[in-house]
Length: 130
Figure 1 (cartoon, one colour):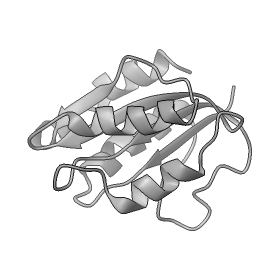
Figure 2: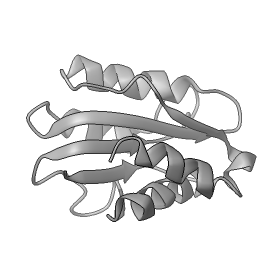
Figure 3: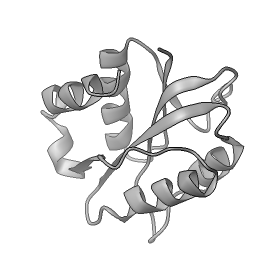
Figure 4: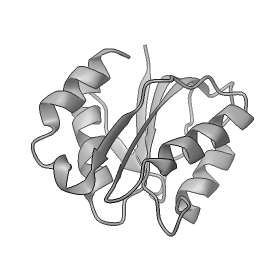
């Protein structure tokens, strides 16, 4: 099974969660604005995360989501961090669903300050999908 982890983070909190997911899956976590972030081969499972910024997701994440297709992603698992709202989860899920990508209903969310010490929970969550 092939697994990919992509994320966008401004504060480093979503990045930390992405790195925990990647560690559990044995892959690298890649920021969507990094060179080579695109999926060159099909990912059976794509863990994709971002946070809410001014009531929307960051343009870097929006642009990355536009590059995805159902022939490159078997299913997506969405995660997010924020200090206020879980709304980014819905925004990401909707973008993926609109592209015909299967999205797991279960998501992973942490309030930003709760990211410290969440590694074990992230690992348990990740192992359900790999």
